[in-house]
Length: 199
Image (cartoon, rainbow, N blue to C red; front, side, top):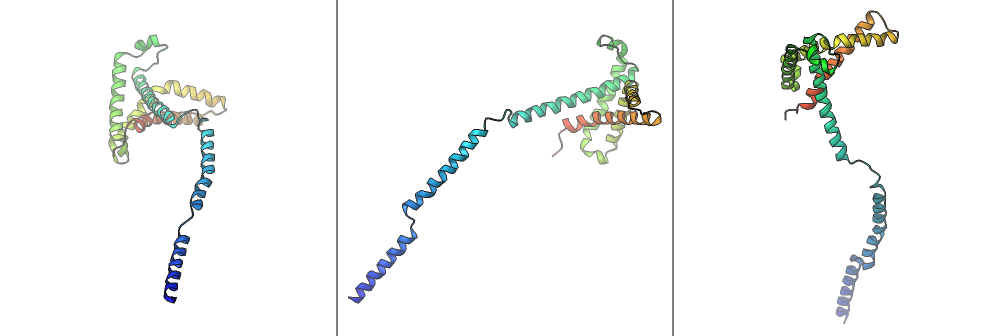
């Protein structure tokens, strides 16, 4: 009889341990009910802020892409105009006098030089630290651009310096420094923007 009681106690003990190890249905349901208000609150917040934006990032990226690309081509055009002007020697007074101020020889010479130096610059753009071809093309590009824009750029800058009270040799040096930096910027910007780096 004692042996049967001990076995019953053993079975009762095992049943008690199993009952303690298994969570009650109420305990399993309560965390889900507690998480619902948090999820509903986050959903309400996302619904509150999702309509405040005017532009999507994809739209901004697309606008930035075309802005950079178009501005790079415009910079290249400005550089080419300087090369043509360097051959022509005088600026047209209007669009109707372009062919008079820029004869065919100036157009062919300026655009031809610009095409050659641009191809060399773009070809060695990502190896410029050890490429004498790139350095030579940049120097030629700077010379023709500065030469072309000097007759209108330098007087305009000197007038601005004079209005600011800057005169003498310092004004001349500053004007030429600005012109060189301008020419360097419109030479480097297209190649760094339009040429895709090698993998």
